[in-house]
Length: 156
Image (cartoon, rainbow, N blue to C red; front, side, top):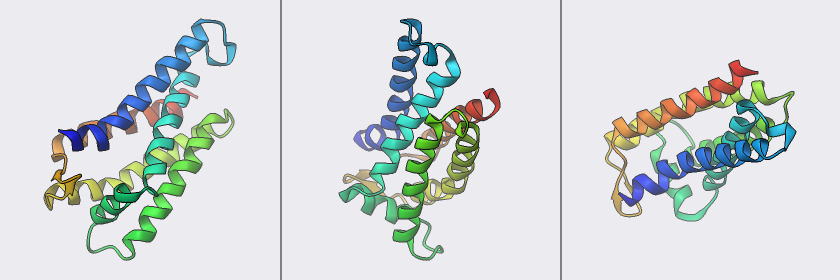
């Protein structure tokens, strides 16, 4: 269960906490956050900051490299590139003029990275010594994350 919490529920928590905190600030008088769309942008930016940083940190980086399907070249470089793209996308979400572009690009990035999740589940990789999260919970969370990004893209 720890692998599910650490790898997949933590980004969901970051998304929800960021959204709720930003929306609350909006309701308390921060005009720039007084709508669901900027609050969702903040939540997504927090989520992608978390997931982007993890691409570069210790054992999590090693686990992400192992998730890359074996047929793809240079899994270490792919993990680095996707981490940078997530961090750049997080910044883009915080700028109103670039938020729709960032959200669309991040939605596409999540779809492009999804085969790594499928590969990890099928190969029964371990995270922190525990089995990888099964494909159904991985897919459900991915749908939620892509849906949030599309909400920013089309809500702008």
